[in-house]
Amino acid sequence: MEYLSKQRYDELAAELKHLIEEVYPKVSEDLAEMSAQGDRSDNAGYREARRIQGKTISRIKFLQKILEHSRVIDPGALPKDSVSLLSRVEFTNLTTNTRMTYEIVSPHEMDLEAGKISLKSPIGAALMGKKVGETAEAQVPSGTLRLRIESITTD
Image (cartoon, rainbow, N blue to C red; front, side):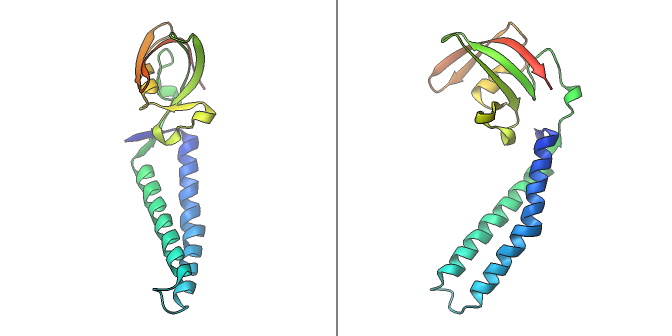
């Protein structure tokens, strides 16, 4: 079971709808057109159309699986005093004395450039359940990070 924000769930549902209603029919049409050109063994256009069809079907199945096994998070039901899903956490790396702020999200919403880290990442997992002032230790490839939580906010 995965938990998604309402925004991300809607984005994935819209992508799925677009793939099913617009992209796949076009891909099928292109494949039929390439298939009608004769010998498939020496038809690069046909092979490319089959490759695109396979990628499209794979993405559709992936999105269907995610949406089938996901639940939309009720932000009001999440704790406000400890780090949880959808918390925006400001913390200090005690080794480098560097402050960082990230939002804790599901793996399907992770976007480092947007300041969103997965709750399953080493840092996200270490921060989960912690309160302001507490220290978390995260095992990362470069060693152990000691992180002090400075603030927690929820939207």
